[in-house]
Length: 394
Ligand code: FAD
Image (cartoon, rainbow, N blue to C red; front, side):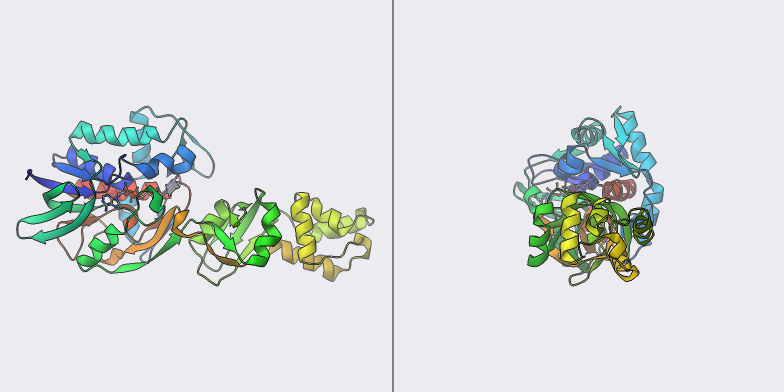
């Protein structure tokens, strides 16, 4: 049996690798374990292969958690600018795509290579193809049973992420370990995930698949001004992914299809300037023809000249386009979700060190915690921030 490690980090993902390098830099003997053949698989496929590695405007308001204060300390001690500094040190080229979202110019591989180099530079060992089966604690420390044998460490960092994309190697191990040591799990569900629609809507919008519209999607909890994309299963695109994290089954979402326009005022004007224009043609001025016709048919707007449309009808059209009611049937679930909402209850974890308040020497970082970011680089920033503060305290 091999030596006792100071720290075993379970999961060579974004949080685990950054934590391991940080702790190793401070002289800790760190071993990172992952069952995958490759480290940082989610980083590699993220952002369409270019990794949206942080957001220039990241702040605690961009995170969902039962305890919205928990993320504040880590995010302020290791900020997006700290991570950008590291990226700059490695000469990795990047650009802002939109809304403060920073992407690699070349490839997400640049980020994984950087994390791996930081680990090797500081002497953190990353052992792949090693599944963690169980963790036990005794007076001699922690014993980690793996597919490659039994390992021993003084401290354990649980960095094995959430449940989204099981194809990429997601497992419930993090939640199971937390529960084993007495932690409460805030109920988990898929977040940043496309919506599916009820059969009638699915059929109605099926031929709009691939069409994208800039909208404001809202419910009583949040509002996002970004694109919406019709898919062959339902609706997706950034605005839908964002609002999905704030959505509960059975609820409706209000979509402003024309947030920049005052539809009633514009229809009123058109009625005066071009009275012989048909209502359907007027709607086509705003949208691609396919969408305009689908909406006209769905709401049975008459095919008559604007001159013959009364104010009540124009108001009805305006209200529908500004508050288009969308009732999802469900979501596509963990199969395509970018993140898992919920997770290890943060009230039982120190926000300064990420150490369990129930079990000394046990730490939780990254997505396994009940901290979930918006779409746009916020989730990786949480992985870097929580990983770094933990690494500093180990
Ligand atoms: P992970 O990165 O998931 O790492 C967990 C690791 O634990 C994995 O390597 C896994 O193999 C390992 N593991 C699990 N169980 C075991 C076990 N039993 N034994 C051994 N190892 C185990 N966020 C952004 O900020 N920007 C983006 O552009 C972005 N794009 C995304 C695109 C997709 C398709 C997906 C799915 C997610 C994306 N995210 C993005 C979210 C982001 O990837 C995650 O929030 C982030 O990776 C979480 O980091 P983590 O280290 O906590 O977990």
